[in-house]
Length: 569
Ligand code: SF4
Image 1: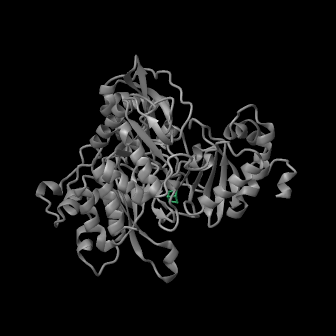
Image 2: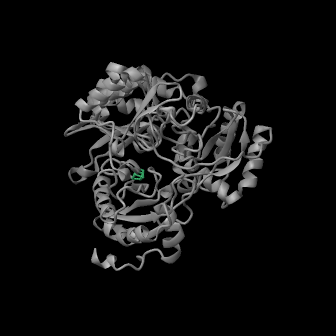
Image 3: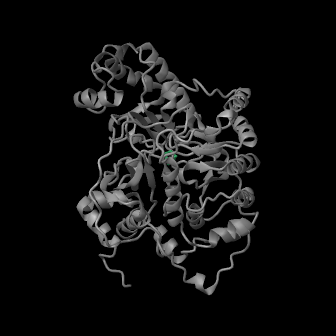
């Protein structure tokens, strides 16, 4: 093709994918060369499709870059069998930093894997019947689904549907299997040389794609933050179908007005048998219309925001060959997890365990990792990871309840009063030292920030008040900060943007309220607003609703509301 003035310049990633749709790069050669401590810039991009991020320990940069790897497991609906869990537990001890990190998309991340351990780690993970394929990269990511068995008799069915969708959207390249499962040199045939993925095409998606399933009234999934969402609709106690959502996403960049967080639109209603076709239809609209010239702008949300919902619906229907029905009524009332022992619909029990910032580890008297391992070895419960970074032991026969409680207690893990109300409703992303995009701390700083906020709430008589608080190390939004009632978004070392005004049901975006707050000053900044909340709230009004009704109307971003206690702090 002759390049003209009008020909848009595609991003570097587009060329990489087009030249190597098998996504193999030179991964095999670098793996086999012990003298190479890192992969090339091109392979860095290909590795993502295999669920691997090349990182370096940013705490150690002063003495030079030390390359380590983050590996992300793909677990649709966050579901794990006991054997898969034990495999993960063993691998992070052998090759990682001996912690398991629950992600906000119900996956596991392993941090701190050395290059020399990548092969055995990936082989071990696949031997445990798990995979990392397409956990990252310009493809569909881990499919989320409501995990909590107490909320609806449909949970198991929706979990199965999430797995079916996940499988249907996997890329078909054989490179992953050859490199990591067989552990052999790539043996590509002539046919492989002309490989084109049947769904994604030669250049895959312009960027990532996220799918999630929610079951009203609980929006534990934050379904509106996904590229494609499904709201299960029950009629006469059975699954009638789904309201299809499209165009949500959290990520944005500081100082770039072309980027912003957006909630998905409700597009129409589909029957269960239309689920796979509908999902693929949404994927292909992103594939064909997403921006391949600017990766920061390459999400489906911008296509829909700029072309409009009627256009999107028409385009989708043309691809599907059928008309969508009108959306059915639904109502979300809340989000978050339930903790402690609870009854399932089938008579079994499940146990909700709080995991601070999603990090399963042994620290001091709280030996969560060892306790969970003992419980899973002895009682073999199924497990589910939640979007709020907690873990559920599910399908537990009632006669195992006391034994599990005892084993956990022996490891310092309580099943009641597990954490304060604020901590239970909080999420933080990993950020420093591993995430290459982090501008500020998140996971490591969040516990101390919450300590200070808890002390302030207690002083104001608000210690029993749930406020959904989230923190991220940059504006990419991995911990879904923009739907929280209060969130801190990293902008520079020790400095955060402050957003307020999301709601309990995850159906409203918060708004930027303070452009830059120092870590040590967060509680002081909050003091006047929380003081007014304590005095002026209407009945049981929540903080996010109060911010929308009062603070965001009265106060311009960057200024504190009029309150004498602001200066006293
Ligand atoms: Fe990294 Fe930013 Fe995601 Fe946090 S939000 S994990 S800092 S990319």
